Length: 244
Ligand code: 1GP
Image (cartoon, rainbow, N blue to C red; front, top):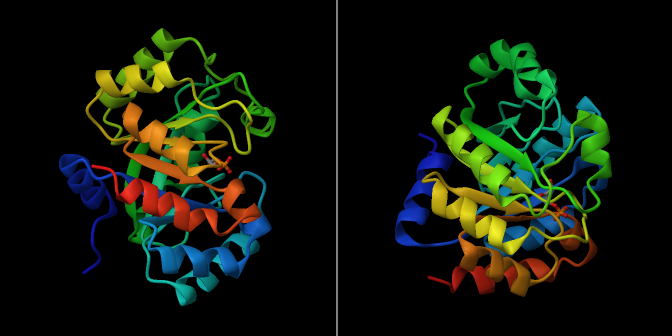
């Protein structure tokens, strides 16, 4: 029987153990990233992207499956990114935005396939925090992010997500952004909800990853910076896994 991804996130949170996931964009796929992630024993491999073709996504899932047994979690950019070969999927609802397609529409389109897939489904409140280079996510979803300094709105949004039954809150600064998450915002969100908090977007050093964990993030997700320098995966794993 497969081990539950969500239960393992909860167990880690309970023990104060921080988690680290590498995000793979099938458009920029390199088996070298997976090999290093496997050697470093990252906790999860996330896969997804906002512009990728369906066939590329499925091919990439199959290749990753052959290269590692690290749990593979879909971080879907669209309803086409569903594969029963993965272990779990973050069922993202873009709760910072007001576009019905990304709040519920895409989910309806994918619902039957998701149910048949046997995937572990993890409802996730996805909150875009602005101020940085969020342009592609904003353009695709046609939504505005929450302003970087609007802690109040970010906290209320996260609380609403939790009250709606979402099991994770993902604070997203934007892929490749040079404007990181506002530290006090992360801290306040953490203080006001009980479900695990994921932080991602523009993290490119072990120090930044550790700082976000100290502020209360339970999991860090890094994509771009590891594609550029695969040695970073070892540095972040070492730094995060030695924290308690
Ligand atoms: C993007 O949070 C992820 O959706 C990761 O961002 O690629 O900037 O690490 P980066």
